[in-house]
Length: 143
Length: 98
Image (cartoon, rainbow over all chains, first blue to last red; front, side, top):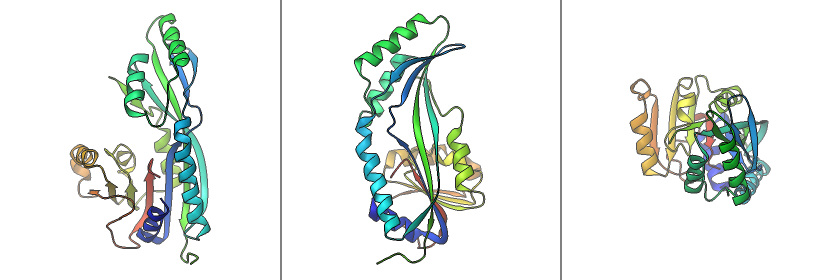
């Protein structure tokens, strides 16, 4: 990762800006969306993603320490994934997020129960926590 | 399956607010199928989007609207070997890829 950041530093113009945008583990909430209500089913176990978060943070800290970049700004914001049903959500998570999130049986059971209890159309939402950081490229890295 | 990603477009808003991409020459690292690329393609002057996954990249190339094809290049490459001249880009976006 540090080598990748060195490569990016070389590719950027002297006044260039690096934008690091990614989801971070934050026990993402899982909700059932009814017509006029949001029903909290619980939180997804996203702890499998935590080591990757730490490694990415460590790499960027190392690049800052080396004088490649200086942090300018940071923001966090929600990023929603919305499915039509708990079944579709489960299929997506187990297929695509198997290395970063786990749906524990109790959480799934609660989500299915809430989905079944609410009359009318429902949707299922997982809200990721996103982090965006910007860094100015510095001209003279420490050797 | 119906899946909606970021229906509130928070990512687009924050990316533009903090990234200031208007008129910029952008390197996007880890573009995948171009989901994020489309969110700022209208603002940037040129985009070089790289990804090591051939399948995702082919999907991005296929999905790229004709009016953007002169300004966006999708290139098979990874972040450890960026195949462009030095000091070329105004912005580099690590797109869910660090």
